[in-house]
Image (cartoon, one colour):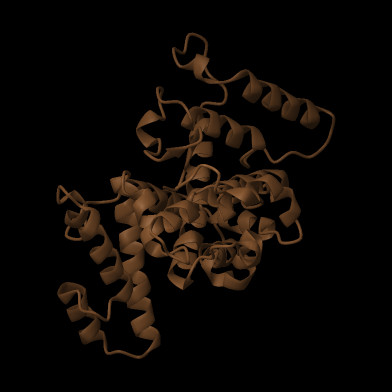
Length: 312
């Protein structure tokens, strides 16, 4: 593809400020609570997370991949291709696609026994799973990608999130627990029309099809989850001890914002010390972008134009 051809998704990056009419900030605050943040996540933190997630999605370069294939829409194949280098996250996506098929069949009223049988037969009714399997088979030269369909390896990230959720609920009363359960059910895919407006799909020359939109909504939520994961790690060591060999990992920017927050609290303005601060998010992004350091094992294998991608 000629370098002069601009991606509809990447073109939107320059006008991200123009999408403020559609905001997921309230929903993001609820999502962040369900993922480990305080019961009342900070509005400014949610705004920052929304900005990061939006920027990540519109810079995925999926339209370029679609153009290379000669396709007229962005499809699941384009997103699977972008994720092929990160096996753990691709495996997580494949499981998500399987369960979307499973849910679709439940909605259509298929008997439970047939569902369990389909899981092992990989029948044609598993349209998302079959689509993914056929495409990965076409690009898989080593067998590693197809092997993921048979891999039952425990997802350490998912396991950690479930354990964190269990710890969160231990001290909750019935009202807090009901709020927590409601927050856990929130996702971008449950507000599909709003999600399309948020991405400004109507302005794209090459638009995502229905399955691609499902995957983009999934990636959006996964990006939020990973931001919370990393910000909580930063929050744990926000006050390094003297002589700590890792204290140099905290940036001057983080210290500046942290000190500013302390100063604000000292002035008598109520501060939510338990909530993730914008400085935690910024520091998490800084560390995540480094190829060396404590977070390097979690760094995405997919980079484009200097940007490190969180969800793929």
